[in-house]
Image 1 (cartoon, rainbow, N blue to C red):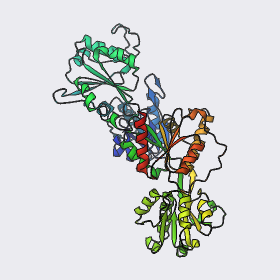
Image 2 (tube, rainbow, N blue to C red):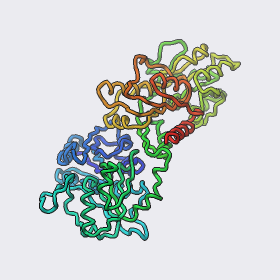
Image 3 (spheres, one colour):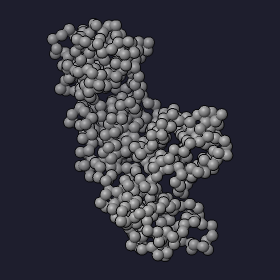
Length: 555
């Protein structure tokens, strides 16, 4: 019994354009064999326990030869009986993706396979540049052509040209020159000067509009306009490099009017979101809608603390794990983070209770984000301080004319003692613990290094981020040169320093900018050498607005 291999088209790069079928398979894959043009955002969708195998190929350097890739697919199918082997390829597997060769190898080895088509870059990348491949009155057909296949073996057929390392074989230049439709060349930028001259020799109008779309669907996508007769000099002058798509025809001129993607406020920006996976989707979706490429890179993970795991709870007076039989002893429940809200209710429901046990109790929240999370459980807050910090919440509760011993604080294991110092008679339940992510996979490290910004969700996330990045810098990995950092986190009491006072920010990582919610996150960011900008309100909407404002000023 062998595993099944899925030849999956990852599409052009935008994770929103990956098919639902492709996403479903990646989430349960045992092995993912991926190419270099697969975006980090799509790799982030893969099963976190999957074996990730990079076989990325570049035009002049094959990281892994195609024959070896074919062999690996068969090998993994044998090593994982009944398993799911994902072969993840940019664009569509059967559009110059050599998926047919891989499928034939699988058939010969008796390995079951399935083809999951992807959106080809030949039509989607031009669309993102505002160039329709067909348009009434301009082009009624389009033709996808490889500009790079095999080197011509006979030098007496085509004159030797300086700079031409690989001449496409089998191209019918006379037919292409007289084709009335749009011509789309994939992987041909290195040969385009030669291709353009051959087309003109065969009768194609030298004034034919032409566009090079470089690094399509990445933050660095750009469109360079030319004509057939200026193709070669434009490539040299503008330093057009692979990967790039070349599109020829009258439709190219529409790109000057219809280019929509570049007008989005965060177009061209890669942002790393370090929020825990279950919390990242909200802000990631907003940033993506504004044009950013978002790389979700959780630096911490949380898990519920139940009485059986009380060893994670510090041995301090007034601190214990949840005991729902004792809820009757409290009149006010104070939440200091969204994690605390979710963990509390998960444990409450698991213990056989429901929200009726909260009848008659007052609910306090450290800020608007936590207040909003409570509303998702049908709970309205009675107390929210104007100063959305642990200190602000503590002072508000301390001012109430109530028995402070009947106040219950629901927090994580890394929360500092701010609230207990202001409310020494209160009880604190540790309902969740925060665990650091020890390392990042290679593909994610590369994505982080190339990012424009990093979004932090908590103090512990930034501490761990700096620790991890420092470890790679120490090992000689590429630093976050020229990158910025965006910090988001509610001004809560979850600010315990993780005993990393010895950490310093590498000079090679500067400059970095931190967008903060609240003074505590701002202070922590500055401690690590970040420049800081604080959002006007303690909400995600305010943070996103601040990010957009920053990049508008920058442009």
